[in-house]
Length: 146
Image (cartoon, rainbow, N blue to C red):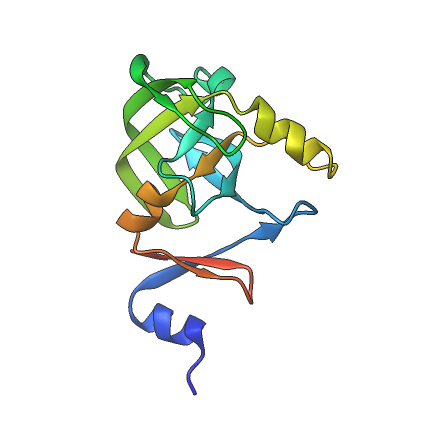
């Protein structure tokens, strides 16, 4: 039987290694608008997000959104929206990635209980869908279609 990694690579996917942290989350390095950050992999998040206080750090041109977000720990969270961002994960990249800015303090507080450093953002289903992503839990890898 052919390994998943071999099959996906033959089909044009690239593999991004993931780090599993003490909380059980997977984290990877993301380059957003030329700036490196640590992002959680969250297949349940509808949108990719950046921490509200990281707008300038990631060179985001964001506008206040009338739409509020709901997270696992709260509802009615204020958001900002940023369009046309360049995102890179390993050798995979996309020019027009939308980003939602939200307060990630509750996420960071939960991670702190496991002595995991705060994260800069969350990769969500919007990106995974566009990249035809495959998550390999067995080998801690994320495959993205080039």
